[in-house]
Length: 120
Image (tube, rainbow, N blue to C red; front, side, top):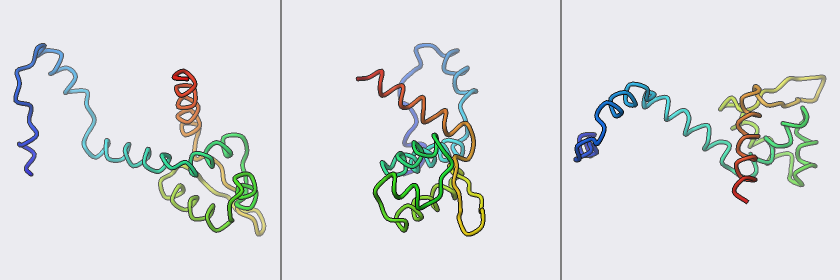
């Protein structure tokens, strides 16, 4: 389907509002990146990892114990999360420690938890 098939076929009620809002919209690429972020953190296991890492920097084995999962499955999830800049790692001796990439990830998670609590 061509992009023109998605053009709205109605007249705007408030043309100035439509124009003002349209100018503030992000690029399609930006929305793809945003959707990609939510796709990564939209998995329940990865949500649990974000939750654990919002409390402490942890190694794979410790995360696996908290989540009652295998180290292999946690490592697999952490690789995806690292590629998406949700977590970062640092090596200390033989261990690799993971933390949230920055405070924004924790803020997004905390806001989501608060929103879910609000809905309950």
